Length: 429
Image (cartoon, rainbow, N blue to C red; front, side, top):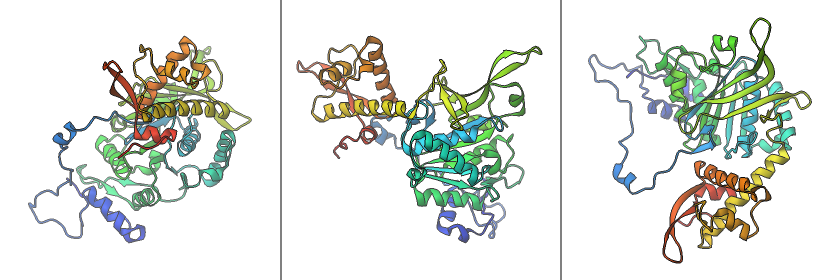
């Protein structure tokens, strides 16, 4: 493989972290060139997965920080037209993740967030954060400790550069990359927003190998319970004609390097006299790729001129959620998950079968904890869909229990992350 070297003085950026990360990616000291015909430098791969150990464990389903949207431990690409509103919407998402609040009706597990703003200065960031926090009913100070936003306009932000030796090199990690690693380690950041790609990627966007190395380098310091969200532009053709199946700029390397890809574009309606579709003034954010879930998710936004921010709306034109509505949904989910955990702790876990006479809806109704919105037949269907959502989020898992007549039955078990989500007692060691 090629060599990775540091372009700036590593001691200025924390030598221990810098050299550790560089060695993990195959860095060698170029001041001591290899002898002619020397064997290639090893890539420091991990050992094979222990199959014997896996056989003794229950497999864990893929985890999603946002069900249907943001996979845990991987890179997600958010692409959109220049000036369409990517940064404003992404910053609102960063706030929701930092607080553990739903993002326009989509649940968000709480994560500590680092937001790299390479295009907007502190004044704009302050204005946007004030509008977002005002809408969420919080103070900006409430984000301290959970959200770090860096104004990097005018600073060196290139994180990765190609070495330029016939395309066979591993690339160059920069001092800016060392800064990111240092901040992730020292502040325990989990979800990293990179706004945007063009400011941090020094390679050629049409070179698939360079794209993959860049994304892998950024993923390397991100913890497994975190995520990487890359914000980039769409291709020129997409910016001209509107929605497209290729909502990103550059080679298919960007599509392949991300496990999920979102596309933000202006909604269009009827055509004008020249046959061109007219914009409605709304924005559509859709999931165009989801390796770990269905790629059929979408949100629609419109600009609120009074609140000075984009708000999510439903197909009927209603807002996807006001703060009060969001808190209500979040509280209902919290209470149901807690009831499942309490039943398990009392030795009488709730059954997972919808057809059981003692299913979750019946049990909750018996103890007076079935929300009114789930009382009807349609409401109960929504309740079982909510349980599936909990399972996909990794909060619930299905186990095996026994009835009093010693008949085998399926039961719901609340996982450690699920217990943390609803405040129940942790699982015994």
